[in-house]
Image 1: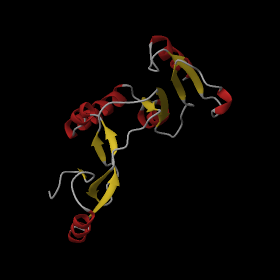
Image 2 (image 1 turned 180 degrees about the vertical axis):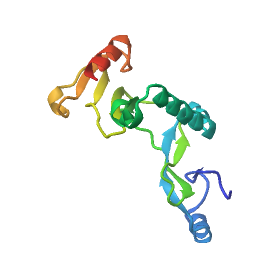
Image 3 (image 1 turned 60 degrees about the vertical axis):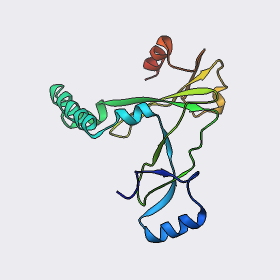
Image 4 (image 1 turned 90 degrees about the horizontal axis):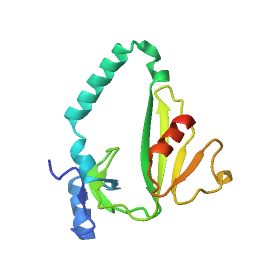
Amino acid sequence: GLLPQAWNTSRHASDDWWKCFKKRHSSLTLRIAQGLSNARAQAFNQDRVNQFFVDYKDLIDTLQLGEAYGELVYNCDETGLSSVPSSTGKVIAQKGMRNVQQITVGERGTLTTLLLCANAAGDFIPPFLIFKGYTPDEKDYPQYTHLVRTKSGYVDHDTFLAFLRHF
């Protein structure tokens, strides 16, 4: 390969260099990279993804869910929303790449945790938001959104039980 998957240009090259480089390599473009922790980058690889799908198919077969699995199996995930998003700047990447990522350092600001849950049939439950230290007014959020507070802004035992009741 000509370059690594993404190469940070913010501290490497002049505009003239980039213009000449882009002319010689028309398959590349500048994109804004998404933050990706080093631990997640190391844990996400082709072998693990392949093993997940093997295990998933075995589970669907064992539970005899057949074609209905799309309506019966939900995927839940959480994400941290920082009040001070970090900016990674632009990187060089192949044109058409859907996910361009760059490893970032730490989180800053106040954390709000968002729990979401959906199935393959397109059904989802309303969002579940966990705020650090306070609960905002529910009228400022979409109907059925569940708002809670914890000391840290993270999921704890009681909050997870509340999420299951919400589900």
